[in-house]
Length: 158
Image (cartoon, rainbow, N blue to C red; front, side):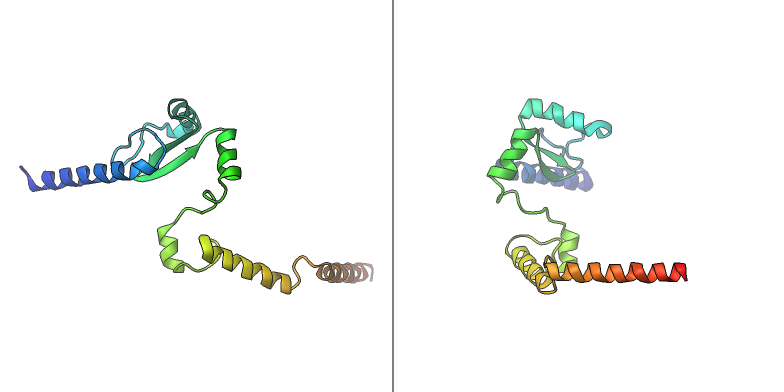
């Protein structure tokens, strides 16, 4: 037996085992291929493919894009339950490993959890201290805009 074929077979089996062992926590869905995932989806009309899968697996199911599992919520009731009743569980953003390495877990845009809450609170408090949302800053901006318009009118007429 060729060592390359043996190595490739072992990697394929390991990949299949890894996918199937982590699948217990995910909703049901079509069985993916190890590398391309669910290539049964029609890329030209992915919406129709997802509708067809929802008829088979229900309103909440899992598809694999490559080796990454994606949970699909299909229909108003499934989305409403996820966002309204289970909002805390669905409030996190997906992770982007390259961005996580680049930002080292800091920043506003790609954070989750406690760090995100603290950063958001600090940012809003700082913006509030600088005048965001206060009537006084709005009055000053309108006054400056009025002066600018008057200055432009004088320039045009004179």
